[in-house]
Image (tube, rainbow, N blue to C red; front, side, top):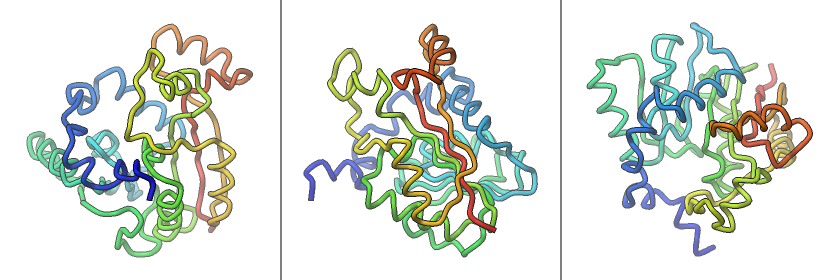
Length: 236
């Protein structure tokens, strides 16, 4: 086993300060970063009031809290008990009762087949080794309803910031980011397991000034494509 494999394991997220770092930003839906995440993910797809949504790798509960009151049901799933304990505490403090938070391995959710209308995987796949990623997208296909939507939002390894991060130049490498996926790889693997790809694109970052150049030039300059956007569907 690769010595770095420990960074996926549940113990990494349970035993480190992963869920206590930058809580004021990551747990605050009004922070610049979280507003950016929510707005860009919701630009990929429009939530519907009649749908059941599953957020895999929910972390600080960003998308379940943002979807509260907007969909029929929203579920936040994470392998880390620390994550779910945090989310449940926040939901209780805010008296939010229409979100279900569960501890589970996304490779085997134990959810019924054809039971979820939309699955969100935002800032997740860079944390997963390829075999785990493949198991998760297969499970996603199983539990989605026919025509159900699969939303992927993940860093582009070809962006200038990610190139610097991998070399610890200016930016520090995140040890939990164990395997970045390229757009061709995402498209290939989604097709292989049976998804139909409806839309792909690239997000600009939330960094002031840089994001102006990204929005203008990302169509012609891969170095300025901050994150991959993918909307796939389970065939009807």
